[in-house]
Length: 474
Image (tube, rainbow, N blue to C red; front, top):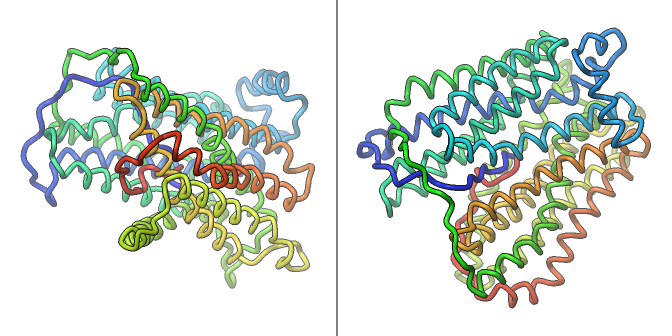
């Protein structure tokens, strides 16, 4: 799945639009921002696909882990909270903590860019920190500092990069919607190609080489941003504080309702977070990756999470439009419930893998491919619709805050998935995936059962944006 969208509190004063459209009907600045985003996604998704495999397969082995600066103290701190962990357990826990902080820090980074530095300075510093982090992963000794650099860098870059898109357009410019579709394509393309490139490099040249490739990708993104920055509107020195005001009774009701929907997001992202985490270990140990004489690198499977949404989004939008013409389009709560249930069916597909496994306990390669198709169809039904619910129902003065709170579901889910990942080696894969399916499926069924009361609580539907890849998980 693609990344969580970054939501930022606060805004700059309105900035003047860039020069008129001069490249494919859009300002040049859009292509600068999209190009930077592309290389960020390539570096991030490439590293994400390798990280837990690298930790569990190599870094934590005796003779290697002793070289990692500060790891003894780090492990002691984690186990003080979780209890004793195996090497695989500390790998999944570390990945979950890393993803939780990575999805949380853009909120802080956006605040810094809005009120302390400037968005442009924050993006530049973020790209530098991320580049350093990727290259630091190429050495065992600097593993933990590398993760810290990546977390801080992603917070600054992602909290401010996408926020600059709107400043390229005048109020009411209809090209803005198309601009975010460009971002949709970029996110999905980066998520698709990155695991393929870094996976093949890691397979033939080692994990450290794969991380270095991700570092070069981020370095290219930095150059794209710096050399193209002349096409971006200048940052304004004056910042505007977040709007304050008394909420109306309807707005208060909407805020309470959005908080009631938050556990549903948490359940969905908890299951999705395991696909970034434990799923890679499951593919490594329980899937026949051979195609003739070639063995498919495990990270390649993550590339399907970039490709599948690009295939499903236009089909789902077309299907909803056809339903709307017939007056049968489901309401937003039905869509979200259906999405969770479909995603749960995908996870149950993983649980059923032993039924088609060979004597070595390995399922055919088509099995995880089908999983990605099923689960991503569910994600297209759920993720953008939930985000649109928050965007349309949050009070204007609280919109950034409420969207940030919705995004924190992915952060909390990453922490929870790291803890649950420790269960994986102590139970069968079938049981593990069934538990995860029950979490997201149970949430979906609850929404479907309560869709009537929910619809009455929130009142008549407002026009919602159609789904796009920028609103999908990473």
